[in-house]
Amino acid sequence: MCEYNENRSRKDNAAEVTYYPEKSVKTAVNRKGGAVRTAGFIMCMAIVSVASVSVYKTYSEKAEAETFSAVSEIEAERDFGEEPAEDADAVLDEKVPDQTSYKSIIELSARTEDVSIPNIVRKVKPSVVGISSEFSNSSVSTGTGIIISEDGYIVTNAHVVQNTDNGIAERSSEVMAVLSDSSSHKAVIVGADSRTDLAVIKIEPGETALVPAEFGDSDDLMEGELAVAIGNPLGFELYGSTTCGIISALNRTITVGEYEMNLIQTDAAINPGNSGGPLLNSCGQVIGINSSKIISDYAEGLGFAIPVSSAQPIIDDLIENGYVTGRPMIGISGEDISKITAEYYNLPQGVCVRFITPDSAADKSGIELGDIIIGLNGESVYTMEELNKRLDEFSAGDTVNITVYRSSTETQFEIALQLDESRS
Image 1 (spheres, rainbow, N blue to C red):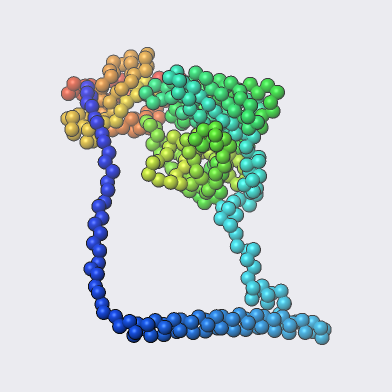
Image 2: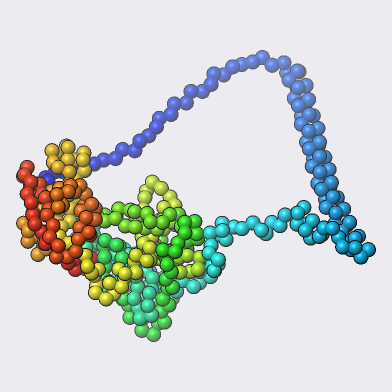
């Protein structure tokens, strides 16, 4: 059994810097001599300044005269009916570079078929909604959603419409969607998946004409190209805010909770409230679903989004079935026992079982709360993330051997994996 109570504290490291002032050295100065030297220094500087201006003016006039002379000779040759050896426009282009040839960072990061950022906002903003979710403890969370169909389907993040802080997914008791015209609509949760942080809700638009967003291909992204985010950072007071940046990196593997996620990294500002909103390319197409669940208190310019190409099958499953099909499960939720904790409490490193889904494979097998899972099919397991990753290699109906540490002994459990039909 893993009975331990680990209290952790963090102390900010502060570097103490002691300042030692330089010793003051008094030097006797001849005031009369000092005044003479000061006057001389000022006069020398004035002479240098005048000389510099004179040289610059002479150089500029000489360059201008050479350019004018070259062009004049070409024009004179034309007046006498002769074909000039050089083109006047070419001479001017060579002497005076065209400043309009330099591109801005937005131009450099955009695609060839791009549209301007104001037009991207104008195009996509009607497809972006605000989402307000109320929970049983009277707490309210806000987020962003993307309209994906004219009949009222909206995609957002799972953590916007459900709370999993206590290890059990609690869905919102009331979800409201606020459209770009400020109208409010009651929404129902069609499906939510904590593992991918995706959810689908639905409203009845009535007479309101909904504008679905255009989805692009996240597999076609390149690092360095333009990225635009639209959402409601920090609540509805900043409804419909637009930020922009670039695609900083692709295929970032980030651990969120018990699962690994493969994400797009961007430096476009993404804050709490942006959750579930669109990340757009320079064509105004949705290529990612922003997630502010993945933030850092110690860095700036680190935003993450779920790639559309991996999100689309999840969204389709949620609409059709209400959950993600085909996943195997054993039915436990656990807490990692770190190496330090294991050594301190004289326990093996592994996953301490903190919750067992009723009537699940784990529940029927005899696994108990407090057991420490240390192996799967004879290979060591150290984290919940690792256990889930290994289980994804199997299918529902497959039998696996789980090694559990309990009361100083190791026990083997044969578990037939069940189909995960959880709606969380």
